[in-house]
Length: 423
Image (tube, rainbow, N blue to C red; front, side):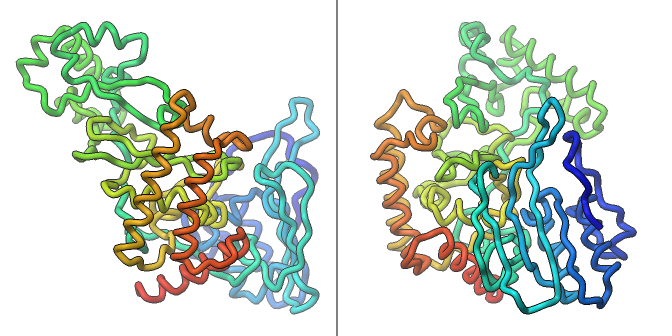
């Protein structure tokens, strides 16, 4: 089986046919993966060679641990692979898709060949002979990473931000701010509101956080009364019964996870071109949206770990992608991060280095995070602060040669070790 020709248009990838998997189907297996199990079944015990050009989902994120055991257990090895690259169509409108090419055989020779591409998948590939190509299309052992309900390490538990389900009625946009603030009662409940776009681009946005408001206050304020009624009608109009039931508490966000104190804001997606993952601390009183994750981080420890080269290497190596962008996952990339056990002194050192990073960023108040982390434009003070974090984190991992290749090797080894101890 092969994929003929180039793709002609962009379209959603349908789910796999469960029958193709013979009882081994999971919801992470999309239509593309069905061709791989079909090939395994078709060739049986033959000494064959086969390959596919397919969407890069087969070597990224959660599908990997569900797809690859079927291939490896049948005795196939990855003989060659092209990591994810951008494949442009010949159509006039120039649609494109990110794909990988993966080939298999049952031989021990010749040595596997791995082609790597620049981040974003645009540019010439680099050929590399390696002892083994693992399921994430990296040189190294066949390690499979599975999501976890709790962090594998000393990192704090994280959660989604607050979900309004309000039809926009509890959110205050910049052009509405002065009107809402002119209401003396509504003004008391205005809070800065941040999601992914707000934290990256410093976009101003607010919400009405009414968890401590009284019925009398909500009735006496024309602004609050109007917006609560708007939320109530929006929830009643929802087809979801769960949302309809929330109409009786229309002054509150539908799902609330906000806790007192400062918190670490973590975006769901980040650009593949940024050298570091862009997380940010916010003070008490700022409200997080459901478009970011949050973590309690009073000592800035989590900020330090997530700002390290080691963490973004883990994301690039095993994490899912949105096209080429890096996708953050609570259970998959965060909870599985194999941070080794640390001494209290090491934890303090990481937190202090994260505070130093925050101070370095503050030297440039006119630059948003997206500007500070624009490739080739990072201020020296911010770059030096990241180097300080990396020196500490790399030491904790016993990484003496901090290249991407060694970091990957160490991360897989630490993951195997920590998972074995956790069983």
